Length: 67
Image 1 (tube, helix red, strand yellow):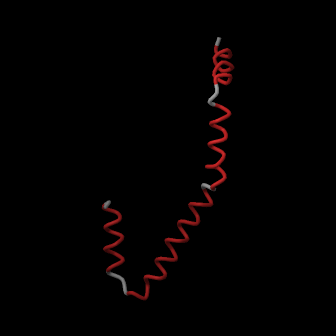
Image 2 (cartoon, rainbow, N blue to C red):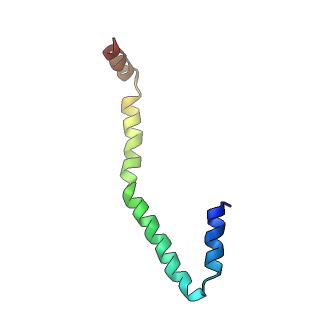
Image 3 (cartoon, rainbow, N blue to C red):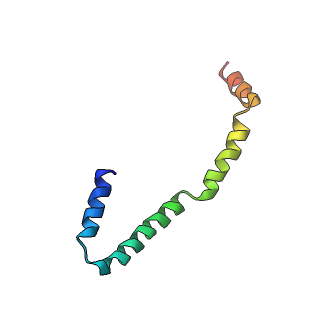
């Protein structure tokens, strides 16, 4: 476990139980913001781009440009 994670747990343990739900909601908010920054479609398109770009024809085209 990382030091930061241990600190978070320690801080959580020091708070009254009535605040735990609020903290959980905040964690879920942070996760949702992260998902908005990196949508699944961007990850899905990576495989398609890799298939199109990592071909011998592409390498030949780029190598020809260098000459």
